[in-house]
Length: 161
Image 1: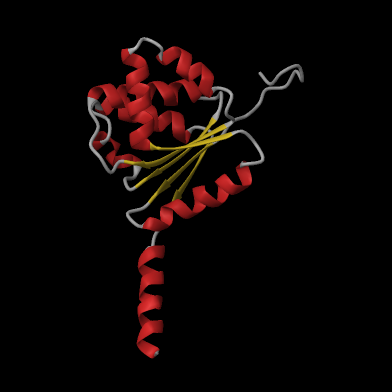
Image 2: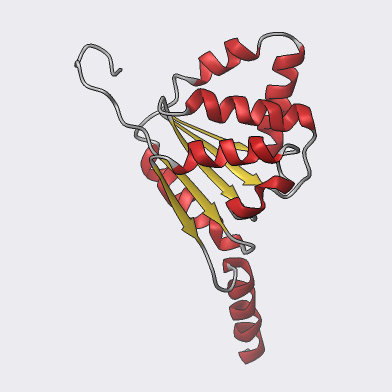
């Protein structure tokens, strides 16, 4: 519930998938706008290491409660590195903890259909995807990567000189 207003606050999730660098553009642009609200941006690797450490020190619940103060959490580059049970377990706990309580923006090079390769357990992958899809928006970015496109333009520009 949202404070004393007596209304329920709706939260949304955004997932951007692509094997190209362009998948960062939408969340990055949204992050700029969302700086007006409470936002926390983290790479997937660093975030999962911090959550895993918090679990081993028996203060994962406290960390999840601290993250409640952010209206939006951005998790960047999920899927590039294979994760172990401990990391995917804390990732699922974060997703479950944020479900209908706060928004998540996740970028990944993998679509939901292949999240079995991120999560060690297929059931956990489906449950995580279900929570993200409910009240969520999914953007699949296609086309040439921004980095490749700009480097081609720079090469062409220098060739003209």
